[in-house]
Length: 183
Image (cartoon, rainbow, N blue to C red; front, side, top):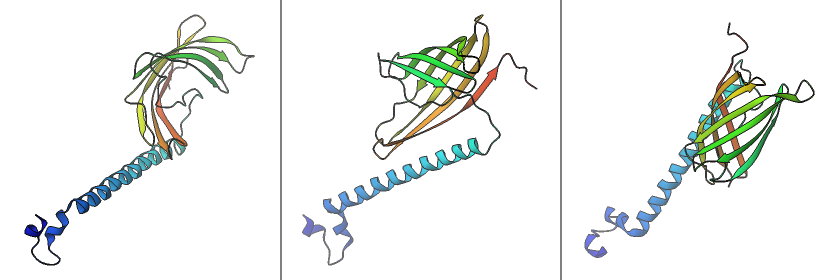
């Protein structure tokens, strides 16, 4: 059949042989992966630059990955910060939702009880090897009297590199304090 398609030396018909087609497909797939890696790296660089070079403040607990606890699994998350620290058990409600309920301690004042912190995290997908994921997290900090103290929402983005040897996390969001009036 190839002899029927071939019309002389150097004919374009030779490029339709299966081995040439497979080589071209592999090159195209490799190029797609390289472009995706560069695009994701560029997005991370822009987000990182925005966070580093802007005049922003963040509470220490707003550093999180864009992954959830496995379905029907339990984990304990802790944050230690300059102002407050949190101890939060979290459970994976399903494949895309995590629910946590934390206890807040005042780091400045001998670790006295400060309040409670219910939190919900939803992600689009858990990242795979050399993949990425993003989602949304919101929580409401309640003081000792169970009155709203702070509300926060942030969007975590995680990127896995080098077969999960390196995982980069970037969070951007808002933190609104009910006790401090806005000026």
